[in-house]
Length: 485
Ligand SMILES: Cc1cc2nc3c(=O)[nH]c(=O)nc-3n(C[C@H](O)[C@H](O)[C@H](O)COP(=O)(O)OP(=O)(O)OC[C@H]3O[C@@H](n4cnc5c(N)ncnc54)[C@H](O)[C@@H]3O)c2cc1C
Image 1 (cartoon, rainbow, N blue to C red):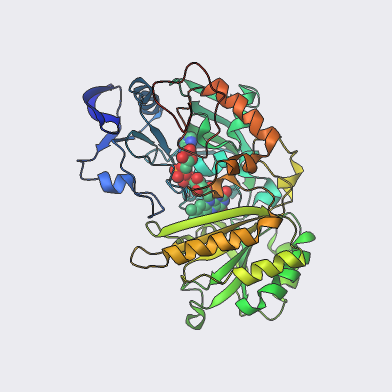
Image 2: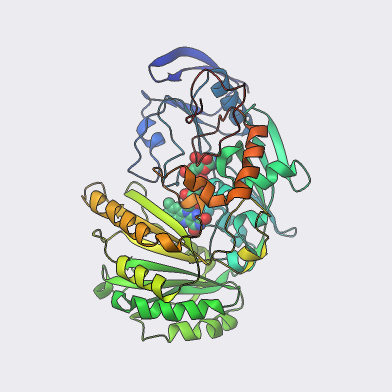
């Protein structure tokens, strides 16, 4: 069915009323709509933006219609996948949000070990469908994170050291470009675009479908956290450095510095106690995992050891309630080299100096299959870094830790300054120096991304993101987009 409907849209005070929005079957949500405040909310409660129009698409044709409409009326454009990005780039002021949150279908081919995933799906959707067949691909470690934004930035997770980043498992995408054209990109079709989409973020179009390679995983894996008192952080990190250096690729680990969350699996007397926690996931036979994890579990008499056979889907959502939608978040992040003693001292000194019991730092161990893809093999930068750390201020709307813990992340980040080795683009916040986007890629990858951007989005229609700016061209329209002259 084809519908023509009307919308009031515009930039700033210049509002067009009753313009025709042709061939759109989803929902158009405007400020007067009863669902408007829910529809404009993203995961980070600190983001409060008011688009003129939210175009909630239910299919690729809707996305095409929305892009063409935005283009025709010269609108600011934001793309919403899972709405999880800390910078809140899924939502804009004024303009239009091309919202894919109603497009969450996942189709699995168990024999061919592939999955097709729509552009608004969450990782919980993918894990649910793929694990029904004992399959998985590398995804985020929180199940309510969006597949689209995570994949387009690179994708780190428990499985990456064994199976590569999420983008290393991407086989093809369907993408609606700035001209409103639906293209397929893969190694064989438009390889330049496919290369850029594997790390370059939402700069090149709206991805409506991803095709992923799947691997045998679980469905029961050996996983869980080992927990020590915060005062042991320095010694635990020194041990951890040597432990992960020789760890098999099957072993994924993330170190979390913060208070023990009040989860049912954690004894009550430990709730809110400052702890260092090494989360683990072994993507191989349970017995091999027991052997591999033995030394870590024996290090310095942990307060708690919750490592055990666990359904992969359960472990993938175990942290969900520690990062709730609607709380306020502010992040700083950087990649780090191997943990030298002086770096460990800096981490141990700053990691627990926050005020909010909800704030934390999380450090992903990279290497393994991540570093075996050549630098520049995809658009994900800094593949040789050892760790990616995020320093995360977290406070509820009724709490006043915001200023103090934002300052804490900045102090901590400054103290890490001399160790910095690039950054993961998906961990960048909304107030970063634009130079940090280049830092996320390194010069040669960034320059190549600019070439692809100039080919596919010369007018920088898709700039509400960690922006890669096209080379200036005569085609730039009547208003200044993301600072272009
Ligand atoms: C609690 C938490 C845990 C996280 N854990 C991990 C983790 O384990 N591993 C990891 O790699 N990252 C992780 N991240 C970071 C995550 O990768 C980013 O937040 C990512 O942007 C989330 O994707 P999304 O679809 O929800 O993004 P959204 O907020 O919806 O969008 C962010 C940007 O992505 C682009 N985008 C989104 N959808 C599309 C689309 N369909 N087509 C084109 N562009 C699109 C747009 O540029 C948009 O501005 C985590 C984030 C949070 C908040």
